[in-house]
Length: 186
View 1: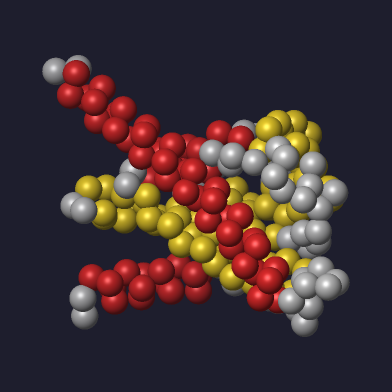
View 2: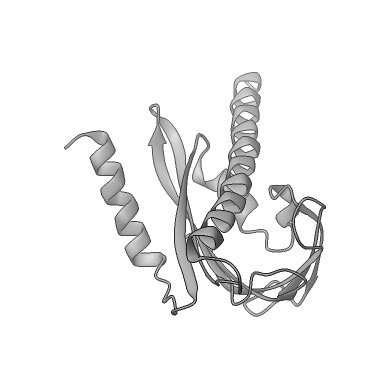
């Protein structure tokens, strides 16, 4: 078994354990995987901030949280132009700092993502011999009238990939800065 096979087996195990979504007849579900050349603690420090998704989600312009950042807290997100929405209301469903799991559900907003729920997990990985992170984000969502399951999944996957690409860029920049600061402190 080569490294690629081992990685795929590990990914499948994480998805089986943390990313089970029961999709109804008019729903689609999928998972997006991203490897990031930064240690888990840096990546998780961005992901876990339910109150500051704009730290790595480029389409979020503002976020106001109602609640104490515990399970059940709600955030009102303003979306920048470029998406077919201006607001999204999202509830924190799961936040596990030990296992690095974040779960949210969209409960309102002026968009077509009805009954949207996502789970994001962050796992240690080794990339090019250095500590890295494997991020998996999965979702389930209703298929809007006039759309197909494939179209809906494609749109949501593209949106998640864009966010994960931004998360990778920011995390990797933070990792380089950490390494540079460690070298400069000697």
